[in-house]
Length: 274
Image (cartoon, rainbow, N blue to C red; front, side, top):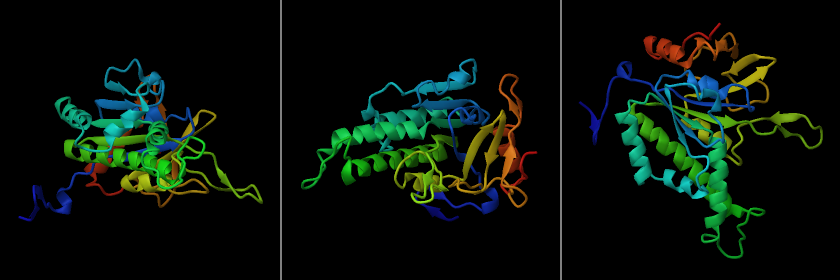
């Protein structure tokens, strides 16, 4: 037996993969609805105002609404040893929660930024200004730290409690070439380098869009949209699929079904939904 402290090494064939995903796209494209199809019961940690309004009739969803709390609340996520984080982990186990959904990390980042401005003046060095108009290195640094630590600590909690973790993010405006006005890339609305650093922690990073009622899920990089990746789906023939699901009848393709197929296939890639 090989151990490292309390952690025991196991054969790769015995591993259990949790579903960790970032769903990003424009408002109203179906990100929250898709997240709802993950294994249940689901805990939505809500930072978007009214973010789960489309799910209010569901009895298998628990909502922790933090959208109206002070910006200082983001401090509670920066360490796994805060009272709030310990209570959250204990509650996940006691209530047998299968999936956590953070809705959204964009709104969490906005709160973290506002908090960083308030406390940043205490950490600024020299003549550096820290204000909403000029956050400076200190303001942005504190905000990035708060977002990064929150995601990492929530990931750690989900590993220990064997819970799936889905993060919802809004998409940013496209970055354009200032001479030709052509789009260079479009990514998550997190600011600075976070849009590329945070996705590294996740197995699945999917982009969603809704074109005339047809919801598409992109699971492999295509065009100027990035980052996008998947460990679950085989993308040798296509990079996207049309998501067919009726939220009224709850009939159609679900994350829960895809995860079960992936698990049954010993966590080898499965075919894209048709």
